[in-house]
Amino acid sequence: MGVGRIVQRLLAVMLAISMTVAGTAGGYAASAFRPHLLPLSSGAQATPVRFISPDTMDPTMPGVGTNRYAYAENDPVNKSDPNGHI
Image (tube, helix red, strand yellow):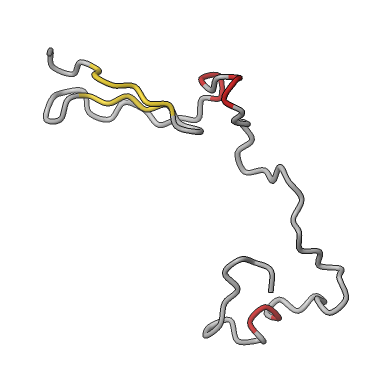
């Protein structure tokens, strides 16, 4: 194996990664969003920072209102809403 020779290529959902042999030259290859590398048959959708399905929580439902801290009974420091649905 030569110095900096690529030994494995991985395709993550939104990221193409190249790895080199540990301890050799080559270092960090790249980490850019490359939608053209996603195979069409994978079912992956290249829609970064977009919601592709509607939220099940409707802020206009009765009882929800517009209070920013209603999810934590006006105490967001000590309480939380882990799934985002009050």
